[in-house]
Image (cartoon, rainbow, N blue to C red):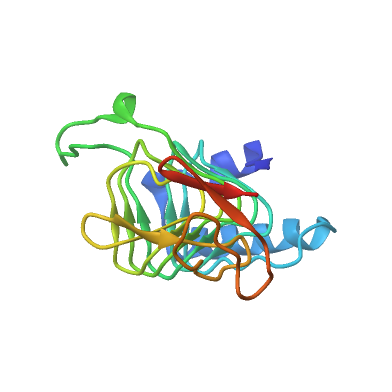
Length: 188
């Protein structure tokens, strides 16, 4: 997990966005990625990153907004135009920066295009949020959620394949085994 440097905290002032700032941010992030040998890929394309946001390595961010209070662990994919919120009841004329609720996206999770993640939730490891979904509550590890609001539709393997139904599913792609543990699933 890397924390944004003081340089970013100066440049990434959410009140001062402009095309020049976005270009500077992309250039600086690209430079940092080139200097970190453990990063295999990273794509930033017109994103907003909040001052206290934390981002991991091996991210895919495509025209996404990552605001203060959002933590993205390693290997998280944020699809095109997906959105995080940071206040439950925003008003233009009322400052509510002291009411930010933390959002945590755990390792390997995938957030589909145009999905919205309401603040204060945790998205589990290797969970999958379908395109256009609205996440209003915590998502368990390996869960597949879709809809408005997002509801559990199945389970995902850490390799990205949907798991077959059953108490002890085996991934068809990588042969990884899982077991149901109450209302959640875990690797066997």
